[in-house]
Length: 332
Image 1: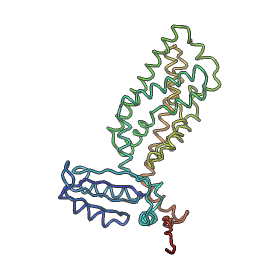
Image 2 (image 1 turned 135 degrees about the vertical axis):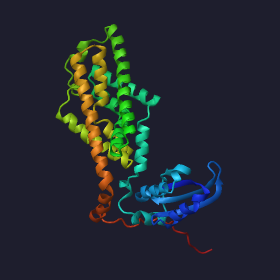
Image 3 (image 1 turned 120 degrees about the horizontal axis):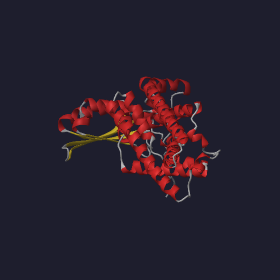
Image 4 (image 1 turned 180 degrees about the vertical axis):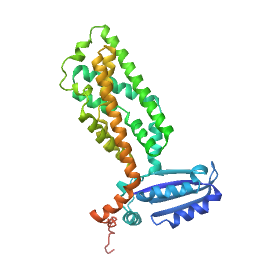
């Protein structure tokens, strides 16, 4: 698997960037279009890099100052069916699916710590679904609320901020978590209170036995263990860009369901439900942050060595065969 670099390079950096790319052992398809860039002025340089080496190349470009003075855009091609791509993939240590581009991880963490309207809307909708799940004792709706909830991006941003000692990022992420959950819970609590005035909802619905959803406000040892495992899986998926895995993380922890139960507890004023939900919410967030920090710290120090050594266990990949269509032959 290759990644594509599209670089806007000032004239005085062009030769150094070109030499860096041409001399790179896991880089191919280097092209230079001189003077084509208008804003900022300079050359357009493009290349394809083995994903395992993309982080190294990006770091070298940053050392040249290209991140401050030019432009860097990295994309993943849909397919690279040519022989040189196969050779580079086999040459680069490790497997492309295990490659981590740490600058990308930090960028995603920055995005995850940004408060947006869509983030708040999704969280409010998720908490509403969770509240309905509590009232109807529906496990299916609990899962739906977990999937809709967007909070893991902020949780992961806290872990990234701690590992990279970016305390401003940690502060912004925690602020987003606290304020967004407070807003969502307040909105749903008001809605629950208004519905309660119509006698369509009362406190007994919340305190009656709920075999399918009672667990979301009864934290125990397993709640913390699940949060640890989910947090570890989540940051690993974030680092190696396995978005499909993130869905499993979303439906593993009960942060949003606990928030839904908390909102109902406040709206219908059930102190025991409020305390239990707050405890569940805190246990889940704390567990995910702790696991995220540990996994990211280990990956920063040992991941390259682990993935490189894995080739001794699994065997180094041979270059894959590139399909060559047969040419038709025949007499005229």
